[in-house]
Length: 302
Image (cartoon, rainbow, N blue to C red; front, top):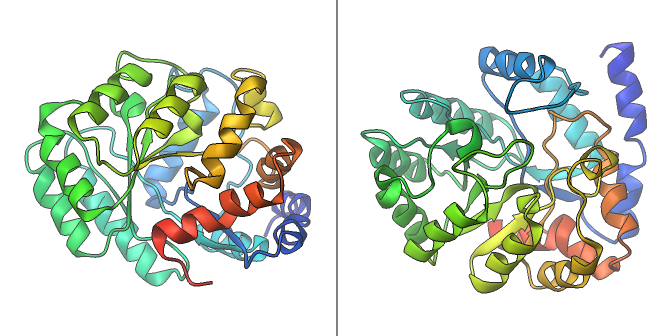
């Protein structure tokens, strides 16, 4: 590990004390990315260039190998994590799924993860991924440039609802909005597929209130905390303080899950947890968000 990587590891040294203090067996992070190396390099280059869908300087802090990043998650006590990949054009999702599912098979604690894109044959390879054990999917309507209500995906949403397998959806406008992001397109999707088990990334930022409404209205809609309540995110899309009581209520009801965006972070992993603790929503809420809710959703071992 490089000196810079060692400094980042030191910045996270207090994470195990955080979850031990709550009496938890560790952390469950539903929003972690592992990608084929060539694709990951391209993603990092896009962040380095502050591309048009990033919109701000975003220095990647954990620019390490897969093995180093897995080892770091283990040191932190992240006992369950995803390997979220997302297709941004036709013809790539099935191969991504092969890679992420192989990665999960070789990596204890990794939830078998998959993705999809509106294209011919999408229902076939999603069905194959489910048969291969996929337990969480990811789609990014901002980067993918498609509407969640694209007719090509109707069968897929139904497959996921029937299988009760959640999909992490980047549905919000942050960091840069498009015609396909925001609460309205996602609400239209839920109107068609009300039993879809969805996890809205980033608490739906910046439209927190509307996405909280959707989580409260639809039994299987949840939210992840990815980047929320960090100093980096709060500069652009701060969470409304008057909604904290409802965030607490939803968290205690199993509707809020820990997410981080590791490794694509411009700050230490620990800052996500510090931000959640700073809300002062109580230890029961932290236990629910950081472990219990994901443990129930994914049937994690105690």
